[in-house]
Image (spheres, rainbow, N blue to C red):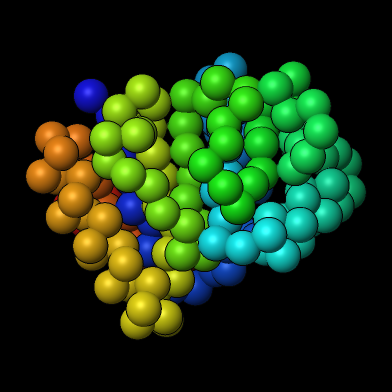
Length: 149
């Protein structure tokens, strides 16, 4: 059964949170797909992952030979690297039936955006109805993550 995690951003931006989650993914020897809501957003995240810290980068691809990269960025439904985990960001969607082949799906949404909150609530209902195990995580005042449901 696919585990679905909902990360509710309140203090940090996606660019601050996503690299750490991807680092944890790679530490597990998992491959990931990051599905964005637009091509422009995928391109912006691609550039960010090369430069987000001075001492390294996250190996990834947004075009070309993605099957060899542990992290694939896309605005489509392609998953050429056979991932264990799918990240949904900036309004990206997934069919609960389509994520059944994954270990985990993570929806990261901006709590300051009512439309994003509404989409997350709808996806929560859909994955629960599909029998997935869903958990909800919210940022604490200290910036860490606290399980809420």
